[in-house]
Image: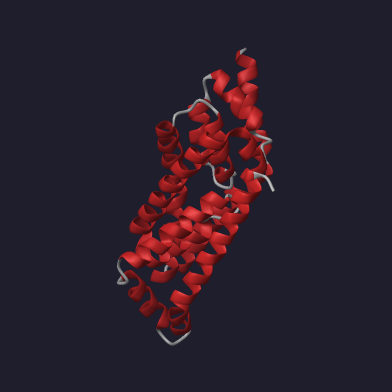
Length: 231
């Protein structure tokens, strides 16, 4: 097994181990949630759990980004339902910053062979072209801003450029903020009874995400094409 395979395998084991621990810890809450008025009591209990609830959420967010192909929306929705749109978003964002810094440091230490084993690298040449064109900073910000772009894959690719960790953490995580807040806000609306509003928000985001998925390569090629025109 390559180092990338070992890292991925270890990450998956850690993620599932974390999930088992989380399920054991929250099983009483799951049972209570199906009782009359149980969901409100569960949310209040978690909010009053203190540091433990925050640590579990941070750990889930950390593993979601490190493992890369685990969807992040589930963690964001859980944060919104448990801690509200703003505090939930803040916890998720903190988890994104910590995990992004961890991945950046690991990639810098292990290099391109590790990344090729860990994630698809079809965008690597394009990131190199963005760097040569001087547009890497704005491209990173926009790609992390657009829903459904493979942000966690990009987290493994950007450290292979000359971008500094500080710049990457600022650009990528500021770009994440609108999507995180929208997810936590809509999820919190489900708890507060604003179901129609939340459904509309999720529907709009889903449409944008579908468009982004369908035209993902064209979006990447657009920046690359602009570079070619400027040469």
